[in-house]
View 1 (cartoon, rainbow, N blue to C red):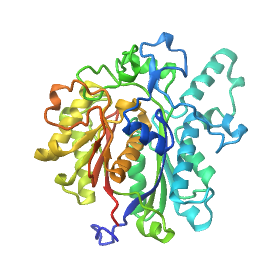
View 2: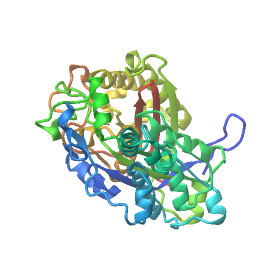
View 3: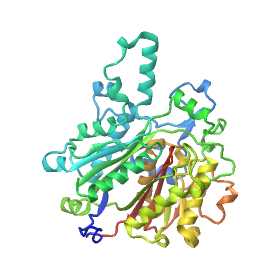
View 4: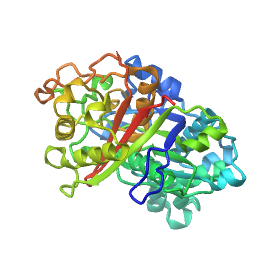
Length: 426
């Protein structure tokens, strides 16, 4: 069933989610991620991917026991950066849940596109190859150096691996990348350029140079004696975010196409808004004005009134300016209804996965709509005074009959995205 005519008189194509995949610091696979998230487990630990002796922030949200051997052979593993491997593994899980074949062919292949976002691309490969260049010369660089690090390669390799031949590109907007990727995939289906889209984000930024760079900005937590308690969204004791890695991919599908396949529909993606602060390279606009406009656009596009919102998955990185600007935007958006909404921040459990954050949060929001359970905001023991009467789901998950969820994702450069999800009751 369509949502009604668009401004040009054509029917609006309904977009639904039929599959999800996740690779996170709480484990790989949506089931594992969700179970540990709801249980209040933390995926933040002392750093092991590199020796953190020279950096101030010595913890990270690292993906444990990751193995891409079931989707890549040995040669392919050497030729694909970890960030690309994450994306392909998450896509394969999503395709399996959606009931799609491992290799798309014919009309289905032509009607399926890919948009995978990332903030930094192949960070580890880039730094490894720069070291080789500096110490051994340019003649010793790998011929796979460039294809392994560029930001569009996750989307490209997902296409190569699955056979998807539709629109294919990367969204690169720092920590808003995955939100933009999913939102633009939504628009691609709505305008009729695809029937199916693989959309999400992937990031593997836990590297000495990245941690050092964020540290130079004084953006990171240095609560090294308590890694699990370091990421503290909305808490008075927060001292910065915790860098993390991960990926998530959702299968978006035009509703009639999903029905013809007999696919199980998990949720509807009904709205998307994207804006710019036009204000500052790192700090949010005053009062969260850019975030507010993105949320309003998502609501308008979905035909949803602010009073209908039940849950918000906050961007909430655990920085004072960002957290408070987002809450200001939520208050402005929802008015008197704000205190009735359950707000949750997954970064308390996994840290900040940068370009993957919006997708990982989207998976949790879909599960919230399906399971009727809002995951907790970990480490929120002493809420910032600015929190006031808002319900931030502190420490423990909460049962809630939720029908509408918003997912925020914001990036350096003042780039904002908001997705609106609706529980599927068709």
